[in-house]
Length: 355
Image (cartoon, rainbow, N blue to C red):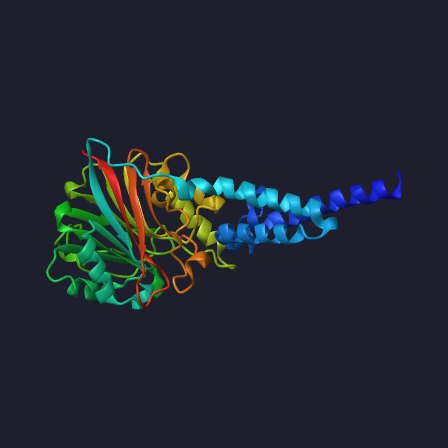
C-alpha cells in the first residue's frame, strides 16, 4: 500500500471515528448511554445540537483534508433533521365526529414565583376545562383562585414530601361536574390526602380544598388523578416528573415508569404537567410506547420550547406536555409567557370520545 492510499484510508477511519464521537451526545441511546450523565441532560437539547453539527460540518468543508468528516457530519445533521421534521410539520386535525373538545392548561408556577394574577388571566381568557399547576402549594393555588372573579373551578393539591417543588395542584372547571380527586400513594394506610373525618373528596367537599399530611406518592413529586363527574370513562392526571439531575437519573427514570403504567393501563387518560423529559429522551418515548402520544409533536408544535423561559426560543426545550392515550385526538398546542417562572404555560385542545 503506497503512502497516499494509506493516508486516504487513515482519513476515512479518522472521519468515521470523529462521526461516532460527535453522534454520542446526540444519540446516546445507540451506545446504551442515554441514562448516563451528562448524556441524559445533553439529549434534551438535540435540535440545538444538530444545528451546531450542521454549522460545524459546513465550516469543515473549507478544509480539503476535512471534507470526508464534513460530509459525514452533514449527513448526520440532515438525517437527524429529517427524523425530527414531523414534530414541526404535522398538521392538526379538526375534532372528529362523536367527540367533545377539552381545553387543558399547564403552568409550572415555580413554587409560587409566577404571578398569580397572570395565571388567572390566562385561565379567564381561554377558559380551560382543567389546569395542571406543578409546584403550586395550597396557598399558591388559592391565590390563583382568588383572581378568578368568581368563575367556578374546583381546586385540589397533593404534596408528596416536604419540598416545595413536590406540590402539585389542579383546577377543574365546574362544567365537568362532581369529579373525584385522588392519587396513588406508597402507603395509603398511614396517611390520607383528605381532612380527618371527611369522605373521599369530590368537587366541593372539604378534602377538595386542601391536603392533609404531606405524603409520598408513587411518583417522587405529587400527582393528582381526577375521575367521575362528566368525565365518564376518562381520567385526568396532573403530573410532575422528577428532573434528570446528575445524581438522580434513577428517580427520573422511576417516575417515567409510573407514566408508562398509566399509558398501558387501557383507561382513556389525559396527562398534563411538567414531565422534565423531552421527545428526544428514549425513556420518555418508551413510557409513551404504542398507547400514548404527546399533543405538541402530533400537531406540528413539537419544537416549541417551554423551558427555560428566560432564554430565546431557539435555546429552549419542550419538557411541559399534554399526553393522551389512543382514541383521543390532539387538536392544538400553544405556549404563553408567565412572569416569575422559568416555564412557559401551555394550553392545548384535544378531542375526547363522548361516553
